[in-house]
Image (cartoon, rainbow, N blue to C red):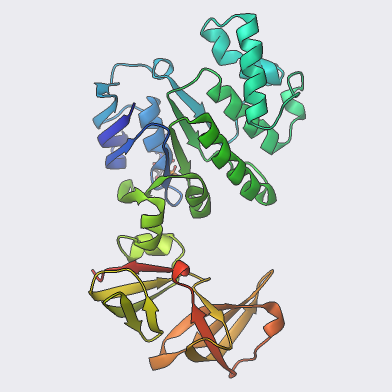
Length: 338
Ligand SMILES: Nc1ncnc2c1ncn2[C@@H]1O[C@H](COP(=O)(O)OP(=O)(O)OP(=O)(O)O)[C@@H](O)[C@H]1O
C-alpha cells in the first residue's frame, strides 16, 4: 500500500505555494516534511488530504488517482496543531466518533476506544471531559481519534507545537513508539528538525515550496545536498576539506569518514567540536557564552579558522587561553562543493 505524490503544485491565487513536489510513502513508513515557516509544508499536506485543490500533478494510492475522491473518502486520518477535539463530547465520545460514522456497534466502539486509549497512554480516561485535559493529553486523544477508524494514512500537521517545550521532547519519543506500534503510514509536518529526526524514517526538506532534498533521515543528516539544507539542519560553520582513502583532511586535522575521494565541505553543528585536553585540534579561545548546561566557546584554530565548540560549565576557560578540541564525526555533515 503506497501513497504516490507526483509533481504536485498548489496555488493561492497567482502565488505558487508548492512547486512540483514528488514523494512516496510506503507501508508503515513515517515520512516528515521539514522546512521553515512559510515553506509550503502545510499546503502540501492539505493538497494530499484533498483539502486544497491541486493546480498540477497527482496524488495516488496504490496507483489509483485520488483527484475525484473527496477528503472523507480517502481513508486518511488528520491531526492538526491544536487537536480540534469536540468540546461537548467526553474522551470516549471523541475517539469513538470515526468508528460510529463507519457503523461500528456499541461493543466494537467500546473495545476500540479501550485499545486506543491504552495505546496513547490514557487508559481509564473514557469519561473525562476534553476541556479538563492538559495540552499533551488532548493531543494524545486527537491521535487516538484519528487512528480509531483504522486510516490507511495518518496526516499530522505540527502535532506537538501546541505542547509545552518541556513536554515536547518526551511526547516526540512517545509518538515515535506509538506510530511504530500502530504500524500506520504517516506524513508528518514539522519545522523542528529534532522532531523530524526523532519521528521519521525518511524526510523531505522544503523551502520556497520546493523539495530541496529527500531521503532516509540519517542520510539527509549526514549528507545535506547543499549549504542551504545543511544550515537548516543546524550547521553553523562550513569548512573546506579534502577526502582520500576514508580520511578527511581540513584545518581541523584529519577525521575518519566514509566518503568518496575528492574535495568536500564539512558542515559543523554546535556539538561537533568539544573541549578535550587530549584532543588533536589546537586553538585559542576568542570568546565564550554561558548556556543552560554547557559553555559555547568561539575558538580560533589553524589558518585563522574560527569555530564553535562545547565545553562543560566547570571548565571555565578565559579568552586568550590555549585549548585543545576533539571532533565528533556524528556532529559533522558532509556536502560537496557546489
Ligand atoms: N489560504 C491561503 N491564502 C493565501 N496564501 C496562503 C494561504 N495559506 C498559506 N499561504 C501562503 O503559502 C505559503 C506556504 O504556507 P504554508 O502554510 O503551507 O507553509 P508552512 O511551511 O506550513 O508554514 P508554517 O510552518 O508557518 O505553517 C506561505 O507563503 C503562506 O503565506
